Structures are given as C-alpha cells and as structure tokens.
Amino acid sequence: MVLRPRWAWELTGADGAVLDRPVSPVFPTRYDAEEWLGAHWRTLRDQGVRSVVLRDDGTAVAPAYDLTTVPETMTVRPRD
Image (cartoon, rainbow, N blue to C red; front, side):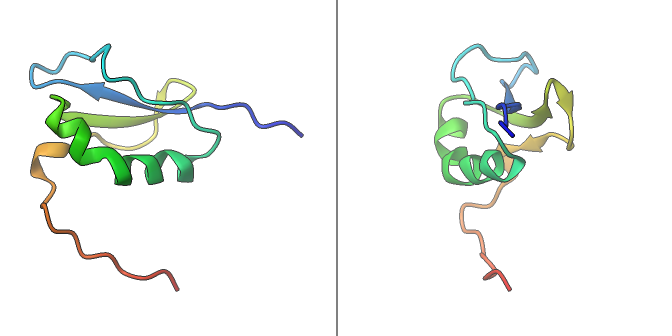
C-alpha cells in the first residue's frame, strides 16, 4: 500500500487572503503536518502568516489556528 501525500496547511495573512508564500509542504499523515506546524509556527508568524487551517485533500479538518494568539511559552505535556 502506498500512501500519497494529502495533508497541507492553508496559510492566510492579516487580511484573510490565502498566501502564496510561504508555502506549506504536503504531508503523508496528519501527525506529520501537525508536528511541522509545531516546529515552524513562530517563523510562519514572523513571515506574516496570521492563521492556518489544516486541509486533507483540500477539505478543512480543523478550525483555523490564529498564530498571533499563541503564547510564546508553551507547556508541553509528555506523552503517556
């Protein structure tokens, strides 16, 4: 079985328009997509991205995350 990449972040600016730069990579799993966002959200915010929506084959699967409201210091709970 071959997995084809289908998960990607839609990035929007302060005016609500979808940005053409920066671009989200396309991921084979939701986990990979969310892990990437966790590692890059500050850089994206600093590049003018206001919010992100995770899409699976083009369909939104979660509400938009507003990157301007994420606290700088996050508490990470270890996995069980």
